[in-house]
Image 1 (cartoon, rainbow, N blue to C red):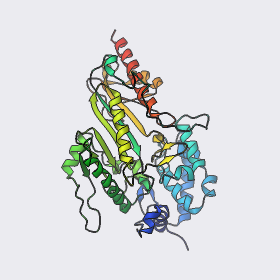
Image 2 (image 1 turned 30 degrees about the vertical axis):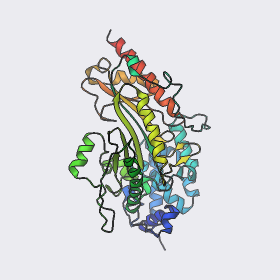
Image 3 (image 1 turned 60 degrees about the vertical axis):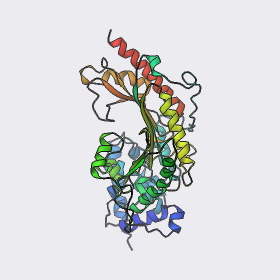
Image 4 (image 1 turned 90 degrees about the vertical axis):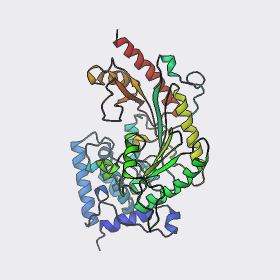
Length: 418
């Protein structure tokens, strides 16, 4: 008998769901093997053949697509049928969106080991490890960085800056967002609610929970549900993330499925410590503030992470070689993005950031608009800069590179005015 994709998707979810959930008798829900989480009533062999044919086409037409470059028919067919189902879901976004750079997402924390012959090649090429031997090391100790751990931008002639440091984290006991169904997304949110309550009880945090989940199922209301107007207000303030279902890459990978269930954020009382839940990673944890000392947001984030993981039921997923596990291989390791908004009017004359990118590129820094990637620079010449590296670099090195990058960028800004 021919297995249909509906049954395959459902079976995959049942087999990959954490054991404690299976024992609790949770049902899998609808299947999700087609692109974008769709349910396709077609024989498995037909879909497999189409996938492998398309893979070869993308290899030829888009040689920079790392998923297509490193996934081979021989490796795919060497896997068991169950593993083929999961790897298909990991890679379908890169095949359906051939202009992807990476083109793949992990579906479970263990995927980086289960499919290591594939993922390791993608990871090491993307992160520039020509030795193929590097292992990630986690180190937040900045006591020897700057002046005894203090990174004061006033020493560089700058005043108050908008500073932000965030990391991606996922819990060991749950599937990654691409493989979650609605039921698991809700359960994950409920798990995090217990953690958020602990933060709210802590005088250093306090705060509020803003949830987009319409209900918790079976007539259970969500006490933290916000209105559409409040959601827009939070998005406009850069506190909440945008509708993920509009992103074709996340949609095809299944990461945006069941929107808006399992999505929302926690915000501390002072508004400077924020946890997104249900985005590309289960958790995006960040600190932001306006100030002059970069180490303040760095140190507070470190303490916040320790506080969150000390709560019962919270254990972040890690990998021996790649550090903290994230859905996208690009964020493995530290999962960190440390950034500042800095005004460089001389280097952005004419409304272009090309000169800034020429200077920042060799320094390992990315230049973006103030609204994020693919957004324009500020009218006053304000740009967002951050170190590019995530993996095979220590956390303390990221913040040190950002500080030294600011110093060199300001030297170039001053020289361009002369």
